[in-house]
Image (cartoon, rainbow, N blue to C red; front, side):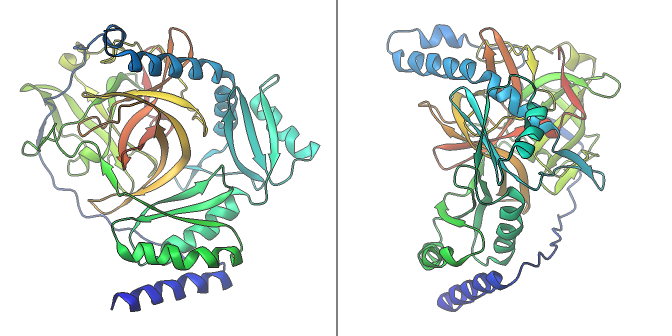
Length: 429
């Protein structure tokens, strides 16, 4: 039976080589369970530890080295990352009421090479590059690289493969560095191993390059509070407090997948005292309120007077968030730091606009940024919703988004602030 399934999958995949018809797919989500109350018991707005003092203790020399290296890389690449943010802002458009990324016909991604932004195009004529130079601004540290396939070509053909797969797909999206479409299959499914072996030889005959990989399933880092669930109260972390874009009401941002079973308007409390209500959340196609996009994994909580009294722009490491990139995002190669209620971690962006299949409820979260761990610490369960930030110059930390989850032991993912930015800004940005 399994061999039959495998042969059927291969036949379907190979048949796609003969056709470029992208068939629309509809994802139906279960009706969210209505619950009246969430105990936001693990919010720690103002209780923090001095991370710099901790890493300077005897025996923590490796953490100090990691910290200094990360800070150096973030400062060196700041101008290149800013140039990318200015460029990519022009690619965000509202389509049928939803915020989406729409790429120019010749665009094939960009990445940071130490202190320079490398923009990949299918044509690097003076006319083509002039358009992008205008987007990034005069004096921006950019160079151009010619590649064969645009993102639009890769996405169109790659998503056809994903739609036809009968074997568990962990994640999918374009690979900027390989100029290819990347499909990650569940490494714990033996049929995935067989398919990767069978398709390796066939990929050279495909109209666009498709890379098949094996990997671990996407795991929400908030499934348990430390070691276990406590009733309906899953542990997660605060991203940052700030205010609503419209009206200026006080609010906080965190992960969205925790709220898939709760309606907008649900009361949020900490230690038995109400701090606010759920305004909106989204985790792929499962959402509450009116987020205006199906991208990302984020939620916004409207704060009442008690919640407002707990607001701060400090995070648990002792760092202070002094700004944000606003509607901008960061490219492949960017070094970032993160902190949740249990862990402080760092990494380098390896993929942007990644899509991950949710374990439950069944949906796909798109628009995530994948980060490869660079230090010795990986986020753990309960860190979801935690703060992700960059440091362009010493003493200036920019909020980039909230932690979504991890894939295996070396890759973690975050939801860029850009998807929530129409509704939320940090207090001093």
